[in-house]
Length: 133
Image (cartoon, rainbow, N blue to C red; front, side):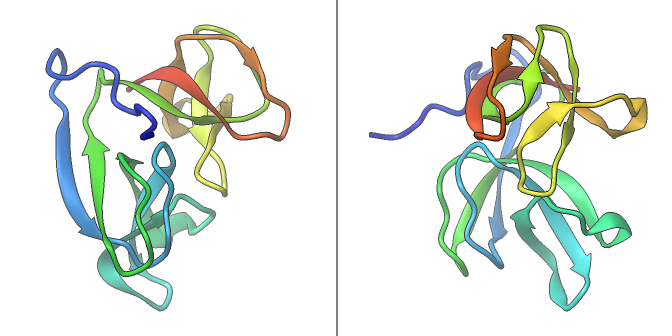
């Protein structure tokens, strides 16, 4: 049974785009477009600490194997179920971590989503509802 990642399907300017996955990614993980660091330009990987060598692209819609074509959801104002960890309150600004999940953060320019539900997930990545910003 597939996990539903996309919650709203037309109310926001969402795009689902195909990208080549240079590593396996899981539906609900934040992904980066890699533009260096030994990986060919324009490929996606689970978001990580690539720093300036990567750009946050969006979220993987479904599980994708290495060298597969990943469907990536991009856009703002989209309601998604994405992997989160830590203790989250509704309204928290969320930032991407090194494993492609979201955690509460304090750096405004690093925020990619706002939590729509609270949860105490600890170190376990759990799907949680967010709205992209």
